[in-house]
Length: 67
View 1 (cartoon, rainbow, N blue to C red):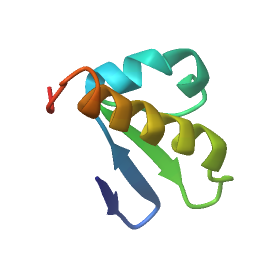
View 2: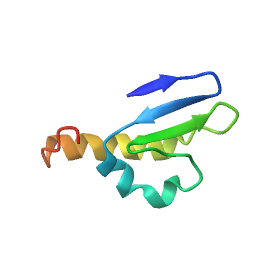
View 3: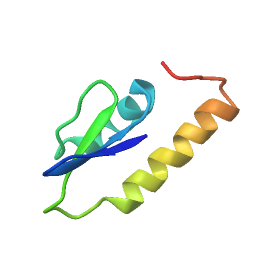
View 4: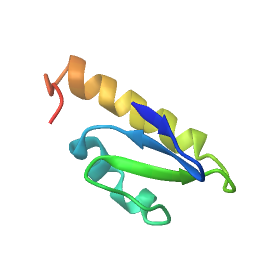
């Protein structure tokens, strides 16, 4: 999921997906499963692509539904 706000966008996934990539998310403000992407910063497309692929595998292979 994603949402747009005045100064940033949020990308939201499962907390388990966020936890897997925690070391690479240290430069971002994060919530339980959300990542805040300021509009004035570079979008981490490679990282987001890897997170999406992980989430798809997590759902299809591991059976992790949402939380």
